Length: 130
Image: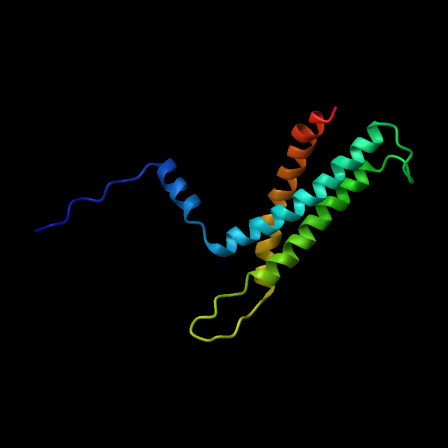
């Protein structure tokens, strides 16, 4: 008595299943970087709105510097928060360990998040305010 053959799943079915069952550390890394990026992008949009409405801000037009600071802060804070909330698996012991791998996970999750959130802020959110 043999088992029936296993049905091959399509590429889309496999990716959808991976998306639904993402590992908790990855979800935490993306969520922490996303939260930081949204808060900082909101600040950038407010700064951009103030400049476009003629506000005399100290230093003049520093949007390029603001975007640079935004990217650096998202990468650093996203890495730090991930390092804090994503410990290594402890196995049977009760000790929680953190290493540079947790921070690296946060860094590599923060890179695309920083870009995508800034693009959404500048291309979608900013035009809504005129």
